Image (tube, rainbow, N blue to C red; front, side):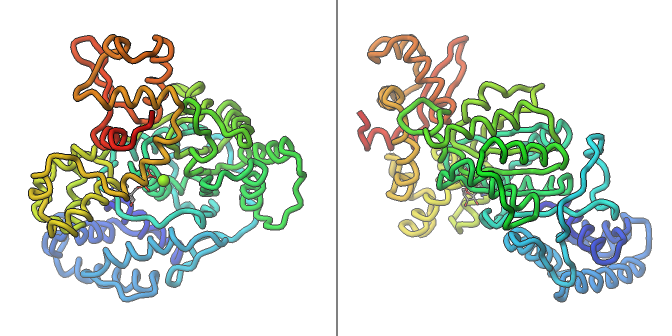
Length: 465
Ligand SMILES: Nc1ncnc2c1ncn2[C@@H]1O[C@H](COP(=O)(O)OP(=O)(O)O)[C@@H](O)[C@H]1O
Ligand SMILES: [Mg+2]
């Protein structure tokens, strides 16, 4: 939670209880205390006396104690708010939620229609507006996020300002798609009447997904729906036109097929393409976010900077991952640059390797790095297995070829003894790129391709072809 999110959350909670927003000095106190400032410093910056700040602060702690239902003071306000916000996110899934003494979510029936002209930057806690209905029962717990400021800003702009209809957050497993979208919800939920999270991990048929969405959106759990998919689809589209909803589908790769180039559907899930097309191509007020290892076909075809369909290819978090090493109690985490680079700033890979360093080397990163062979334990191999195993034969051939190279190679070099025609090579490279499994760099007007060290190690030790 960053300080702006804290201020907004505190303001919303206070508003929900009292009907009044926090005053400027109250916000300055929260901001100052968050930064570790003394009351005297806050008073100086707010141009008032320290005594006045103390009095206002004391009333503020009392107010927050009432709102959150626990004793809040200068020392614990940060953790108290984080705890409450965590509860807000992880307990939802029913139709309302009580935090302390405040009923955060409206339990009303269907959300009223919002005019298309609604300003995205309008104040979020206007009493005349309905509060956001959330269904995050399917979502994992939210945890702290290192960095990702620019990714969050890009997504917020696409979704709130540009009002895009369909967005895909793409990237290899563990890179942080789920975590990022949970934080995104926190940031943008006030712009929506409904926010709903669904995991597609078990490849649900489209009709089940549509039923599930409609039951929540229409707020009628036992609704009798037509069994026809087109009928359900048109009911959903009508709702998305008349209301502003944010839908997140997580683990979308599960409805896509293995053994083919990236982006093709499993035969029984092929009709999701109709849903994605309708959401991406028609005019409505809502937004669907897809988290996936690879973009479904429609996304690739429809995306564009001026299009209502956007993609964000997530990369590693770079040196910000030092914080992950610190949280894992590694010694001298600031010397972990080498480690972060080898594991490409992938938060999950780094968490796994940090556990190994903790368990075997008592947290000494330097000792672990003495062994130059990249360590790929069973846990990491199990994470990579489904991603590599689902590749088409063509991609398997190509990734083996790339992994045998110590350095990046050009298309010309690849063609020399890859036993592939140019068109096979282009298809294979493009597909591996969409799956974030090849790294591409430009050197002296030449494009070079390689495989990152972890994937390379996996491929070399688990022959695919
Ligand atoms: N920016 C980040 N900072 C710290 N931890 C992160 C970050 N992104 C992801 N994580 C953590 O890494 C793990 C994998 O993230 P997750 O979002 O599940 O990845 P994905 O959905 O891409 O497979 C989780 O434990 C998550 O909390
Ligand atoms: Mg995920």
